[in-house]
Length: 181
Image (tube, rainbow, N blue to C red; front, side, top):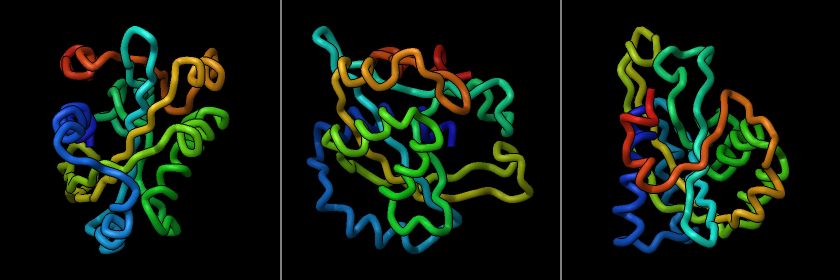
C-alpha cells in the first residue's frame, strides 16, 4: 500500500494529461469493485490551488501507527472499504470523515468538483502488513481541487487523526525518498 501511495502522484501526473476522467466512469468502477479481490479502497488527491502554484495535501502517519510499515509514511487520504460500503464514494466519504475535520470533508466531497480518475490493482506482501498472507485490493482514486482560501477556512490549525499533514509541491511529491519514511 505504501508503494502504491508513493506511485499515485506519478500515476496522476502521467494519466491526468492523457485520459479525461469524470464521474461517468463510476458504474464501471462500481462493477469492478463489487467483485472483491481481497479488498477495496478509495483515496483522494487533494490539490490546493494558490495564486503561485498548486500544492497537494498529504497525510504523514504517526510514529505509533499500528502497522510498522506505515509509521511516519506519507499517504493520500482515504482507506479500505468496510463491508457495508456499496460504492467507492461511500468508502472515501467515510474514510475522510475519520481522518479530516468535518468542514474540510464537506469541501472535498461537495464543493471541489471531485473527479474519479482511475482504479488500480494493488498488493502488499504478508511481511509489510504483518499478516500470514499477502493482501490484494482494488483502489479507486479521486482528485479534489480546492482553493487555498477553502483550505485555510476549513482546516487551518486543526488536527487530523492518524498523524499530521503537509502541503507538498509536485516536485516534493515526486521526491519520494525525502518524504517517505
